Image 1 (cartoon, one colour):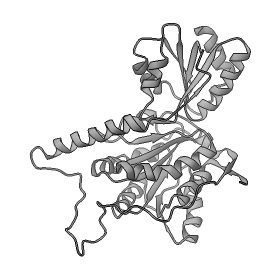
Image 2 (spheres, rainbow, N blue to C red; image 1 turned 180 degrees about the vertical axis):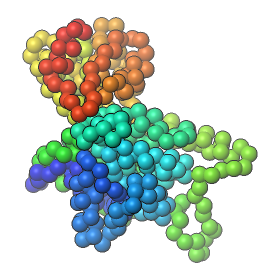
Image 3 (tube, helix red, strand yellow; image 1 turned 90 degrees about the vertical axis):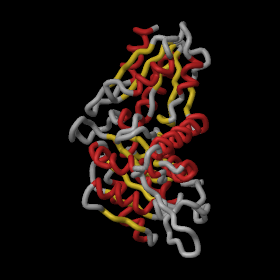
Image 4 (cartoon, rainbow, N blue to C red; image 1 turned 135 degrees about the vertical axis):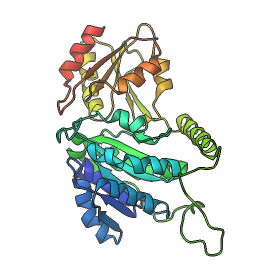
Amino acid sequence: MTKKLVKGNIALCEGAITAGLKSYFGYPITPQNEIPSYFSRKMVELGRVFIQAESEIAAASMVLGAAVTGARAMTSSSSPGISLKQEAISYMAGMQVPALIVNVQRGGPGLGNISSSQSDYFQAVKGGGHGDYKIIVIAPNSAQEMYDTAYDAFDLAEKYRTPVMILTDGIIGQMMEPIEFNRPEKKEFKEKEWVLNGSKGREPRSIKSLLMKDGVLEKHNVKLQEKYKLISESEVKYELYMTEDAEIIITAYGISSRIAKSAVKLARKNGIKAGLLRPKTLWPFPSEVISSLAKPNVKFLSVELSHGQMVEDVKLAVNGKSDVGFLGKAGGGLVTEQEIIKKMQSKV
């Protein structure tokens, strides 16, 4: 299979197209601008739908409208743009509408800057919008994984009738790497019994999130929580690297996990028994595997491009069985291998 040198953002586009993306709705913001720019040409060439909406709010609402007809639909943005999409994402979760949302994170809070960040973790995995809901959150750490996760995301969304978010960052989105476009094009899709596509010859259907009758919303929430429990039991994905005899285990995702893996290799050469646990899904989170690795003689170090977000889930998973440290930067700075090793040396 021939490899091509492309940016992570472009790899993601190709994964979504190959997976059968029919409709893209977006709005410009750096560092995700390659995505709408690429789709503005490619989707038109393929006879599919591309719309640059008048705002992020409108783009997310258009995704909702397209998705209820059964079309594979997506939107993308970067940090403050995703904030504007939260109302529609909550609607989609409540209406059980599958869709793909991509967040190529940038620095914050506020408009921040256009450098890479991982400070939207809380927003992604704790709900973001209003109500008791969850969405599946996937965190690729390479251009190849950008392609693969975009390809797989629609199947996952439709399996559980839920929005799926790819939470990446400005560096993964912008960096160029050789990847294989190695997945078959999807053309045939399973019939969806819930879609709104005209009721000729059948009973009308209804999809809504406004449930006003006594007890109906409560029952609906219970149903959603049962689905989230099933997802938590079935869809956790993670990578373990040299954790078998590790005395200190780094937890990191996205670009931070790439840096952390290099630090683990250097630490091993310096006699430090280090390992890495990389969550590939941030929700559902690999709490059970972290718990199984936690012991009094094992320490954890959460490495993030934030001032401490995923570390809270690591602490909950460890549940007091191990010491948990933190190393992070925000505002566009990257943690280095040397900083990670220095922090590890202070912990072991």
